[in-house]
Length: 411
Image 1: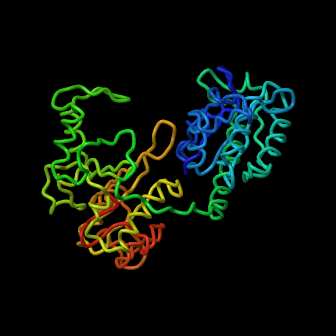
Image 2: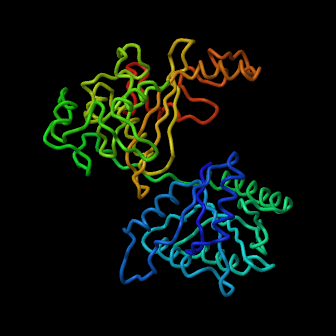
Image 3: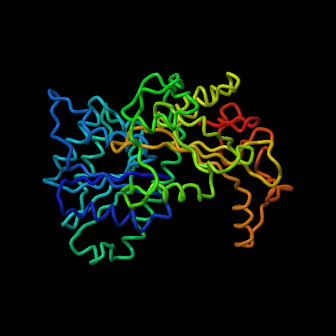
């Protein structure tokens, strides 16, 4: 599960931030937690709508795509902070990311009673029309005497407190599982697979379906290559090193932007017939409608379903196993949404790989075996070889986004 934690204070030093950071570290095997700050959120003023500002859009996108939200609130004069109240006002004005979203409230305070009154106030706000959150009942975690509660590494000192916090978080995980069944996916609008609405990074001046798009587009934008260095978020590599790095991945990787233009695939040194998802250089730059031009209409609808599902945030990823492959291959496709800095949809990366060697290695390394009927590592018992849908919740056969005959996938 993926949660976001909202720091309910705009102060540089915050024990509620420390509490969320502790949860992020200590319970990382239970769920992924991303911390969200409210320092840059403007004071609410309905006469000057800032719903489209970066700070508000960032929070909106992150909360919308999270499975659940944990809010850590201080207590100021028996209530929540003005910064948190203003944030909640913006997120219930024109935007409503908390609607039907599971929320857990926690808090840390200097005093014995923790943040009990602020939490009661926050529950009322989250239940208000326009917010309509599903707030976890009970399970109040009130960390009092916060100055003495943490050691110098930011860890909660008292073991009993940690155990109680864990029980509250376990209850929230179960609560999210129940509430998620009530979630209604956003309706999927028709996808523009023909790339008719250029985005900021679209290279104009060359037809996307031109088989020489890569060379022509590279010249138009003076694209760097060879030993030119590229500064990344966490590294400095040359273009050649990037190519070596990506081509050495034990997966087939592809990328299509949010304008549905197919821009990249690795393993370009491989012959298409040796790839699980067949790709050729002439496809780079193509419209997704062209990449999948040979698919029947029903399969094209599956492509639209995958893109629309990820664009809407109905699912964080879509996974499928392609049926009809040889016993030594479990052809697995993972479609993952990508995001711009403000958290909005930026396209899809696809990972294609043969899951069987990984499964065989895991079973051998752990001394385990597959159970359930006559299943083996080569043909897992829980996989429906006809539809490709598994007991673990793959997309149903009617929504499976991969064409098993051509090897064509969502991009």
